[in-house]
Structures are given as C-alpha cells and as structure tokens.
Image 1 (spheres, rainbow, N blue to C red):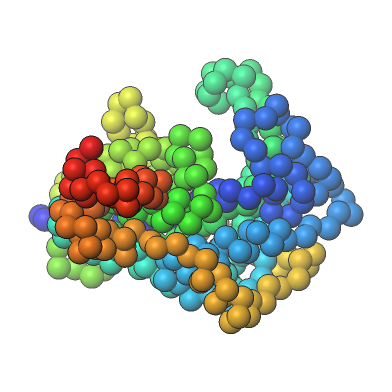
Image 2: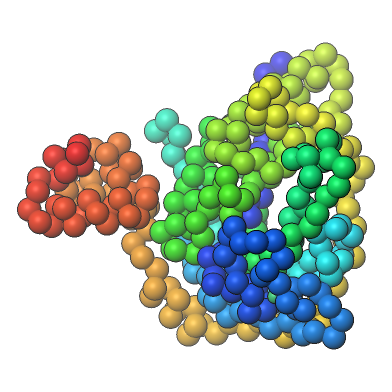
Length: 349
Ligand SMILES: [Zn+2]
C-alpha cells in the first residue's frame, strides 16, 4: 500500500534576553554549574516571580513575524510534574490562553511551495540540566543537577500536522531559525540546545483523511537528524502496517550513529499535568498600540527580501535565497552592492 506521512513539529527556542524570565539571574551559556541561580528560579518558598518584559516583547515580535494573532489577554499556568531538574515541581507555562494563536511558515522544497500553519506560540521557562557522571544515564553512578538553565525564557512554537516529508520538516525548521535570527530573538543553535525540536509522526494510506497512531521523536539535535529521523520512522511505520501490525503510541529517540529510532517509552494516552492558573503572576494585557509599536520594529524578513533581491538586483532565485537566509550575509551583500559592485559578481563572490 502507498502511504503518506503526517508530521507536526513542536519547537522550543531559547530567547536571547540578558536575564531569566521571572528573576534577574543571567541567562549566559556555559557558566560554572549553579552560579546563575537565586531563590526565585530555585523555587524557594515565599518568593514571587515577576515577568521579564523583554520576554513578552520577543514573543510578540516572533508572533508578528510568523503572522500570528496576538491575544490581547493571556496568562501563565502551572504545568505540574515531578522531575529532579524542576525545583518547583511545576513549570510556569501557558495553557489555554497563550500569547499567540494561528500563523504560518511558508516553505520551499525543490521548487514546490507550501504554507504550514501554526497552532500557537506560548512563553514558558526552561528546566535545569541533569549532568550524568558517566556521560549518559546508562553508565553513570551518580547524576548532578545544574540549575543555571532553570528559568531561561523559551518560546514553544507548535505547528499543525501539515508537513508531509522529512525534507519539508527540515525546510520548516531552517526557515523558522532564519526568521528568529532575523528578529534577533534567539540564536537557535541546535547543538547548544537553544533550539530543540520534537517531531510527531504518523502514516496513513494515501487518500485517507483519518489520522494514524503517532510516535514522537524527542530532542533531535541537528537539521539532518530531523530529516533522517522522520524518514526512518515513516518507513518503519509503513512496514509494520504492510505486515498487518499496529503502531504503538510511543516516544522514540534518534540514534545518530546507527541511523535508527529507538523505543524510549510507551505512551498510553496523554499525561495529565493538572494545569491551573499561576496565582503569583498577573495576566498579560497587550494593547493594539503596543502591538503596532512592535510591528514597526520588524526588519525586512527573508520572504520579502528574497523577491526584492531578484527584482531590484537581477539575482537568480537560487542566489537570492542563499543570500537572504542569514540577515548578516544579506546586510553585507547589500552594503557591497551599495559601494558600486555589480550585484551578480558580488553574489558569486
Ligand atoms: Zn534566579
């Protein structure tokens, strides 16, 4: 039987603010363990969090660049679960009233253009980091916790399950990174964990509009791994269905060395996080004037800049695409052309 893949990505990007989301601790990467901590991000009793206004600013900026609706009224909620990297035993996140809803990302794969819709974007705090003595949990005698990352601001960008291949998922992620970098809100370095991606994937017979049972590939840390992991999973699931089997709803990990996904844990329905409104933070009200003010700050985005390079400077679509992928490169190219250098020559160089 012929199958098609149904893929949705959940992407976390770490915001490049100087301080954490609810306290004044530094967000700098690579410091000595547990040196960027305070009673607020350690969740000690009696402390009160205060929202870093730059986090809201970046969230609105990202939402506008991704064509989302900015909600005039949103709030924070507690997502309750226990894990050693989470000192409060809940993550402050947004549940039913996120800062942004809707929106889309346009992608181009082999000349075929597609618009992938977004479900929502919400603000939340990062958890700490477990450091295993032996490098991995399997061969360690002990594990330490570094809380420097606890409370670093994140945006979670949830896409609709409209992607159909590993190549499309990769293009979506690369486009998202390019947009975030243009805005200056995140470095989006997958290898440092400032951009993280979970992929949900299921397959179904071509022509069917029923969703199959999905598996989730967690914490994929490179663009090629996103593509390869999804491609592997699509083939694995199709083989099971062809043999008359059923797909097990599960979380799987990508093993880069072996080029396969590995079962991590079986899921029996969704976890119940007992979300409830965060009583220590006031709801967020965003005025139309504020949204307009942030809109004025948006730089020319790659979707506008790429066709302009073709129209104004006579570049090929390929050259224009390549040059506008990173803002720095595009800025530099434009500065060179402004000095009187031929655009095509400058592009080739
Ligand atoms: Zn702190």
